[in-house]
Length: 592
Image (cartoon, helix red, strand yellow):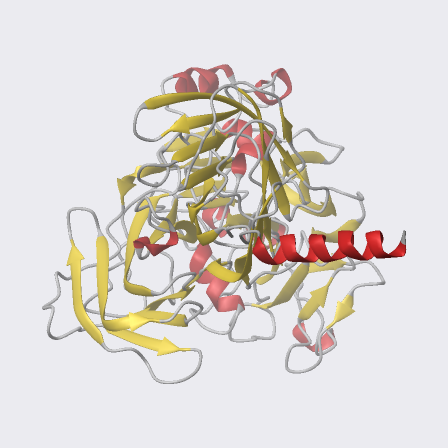
């Protein structure tokens, strides 16, 4: 018996040595079609190809692709249009397949469940997800697989990292191993405008756009667009530059030396800057593009916020899709609120009355809520006397501001050095105050940052200074300021000082589709409620019917004042931006 067993073992060993080795999968690559490679954004589709699948994808077999990062969401597809085999050369192949992603998001298994066999050797698979994805085809002579709903967001926990193939395995035993990097997720591009004023037609100092390149690149384009309509170009760039001179452009690397620019031009028709490099820059390179005059023009005469579309090289996808981004830029001054009170947005002007004896929600953003209450003047006019800002999430107070209504007997010498002249500011006890020279900054436990202080003035004994607060939200910047009633009662009169009041401005508006409250309704962002209509006179309602709504998110700036300023330029500028810049250390003299 022992001899027989030995002979059987010897025969098995000889068979293993003589049998041909299983052919392995080879030539595996991947690419991605996407409008953004920023970590956390969602791609359109992945394209995965191996030039040699020896066993093909035949009845009962499965091919599993595994990546180094979790790029798939949980998904299992039945047979049907959501997961089907496509013959790249002769139309529909007729095979039925199912696709299942792993619980950890690293892998997708593609199983043949019926129909014709896909014999290979070249097979291409497409795993699609984001808006705009389509069928597409695979490698020449192979087969494509379209799986519509299975692509996941880029791994947000790794904001800048390489995405690579880890392995490809066939259920028949053939495998492909070895890391094949095909793109890199990046942090979002950053757009910064340095300007002493946001008034239309003023000249900014510098526009800087910082980009991390997700693929090796030879060019980058920047185009300015209207935030509410990406098909409308905005005139941000001024000069159709001499390609050999590169005036007004400096390229600053995060590290190392700056790449040489071979070509620079501006396309005036599309308001686009085209920058080409003398040699290819490496994937993962971070560059800041600083633009000044003559390349950078005056602030555009365009209502609302400006965004920048950013394009790069086509190597991020095998079908030629460029990587592209739309990133917030800036907003010029386009809207105001003031009066009895009165609000402007573009050329839309509305006078209204705030209910007395209570706080009214003027503006509710996803993170902050702004409420106000009025008081009455001696002539029956209305003024804003209190503004309260609270957290939308917890309803906790962020700040309460009350105006000092009667300043006719103002005397500076009785005040402590850091006292406010014209208003009282109440903040929660757990606000954290900054250290000098940033001791005018307060930080709320929920992360809201506030700056407060006096606007530059002469500090005269009996003339109070205007004062203000800046509050930074994820969706806007709020500016609350004190003001006299000089526009209503005349300069330096007793009644002007007796009717001190509050104004507020809203800058840098974002995602206004989620906003609620009286002001978004008056601006035309939302249908007007019965409660808001009750704040308007019949005459005002009639005027409003013929005045076009501003449109959702059509402006980057709005202001609320208790009296209409003289000489205001509706739809083009207001003093609010100058006041805001003054609070931060520059600008004009501001006395109450």
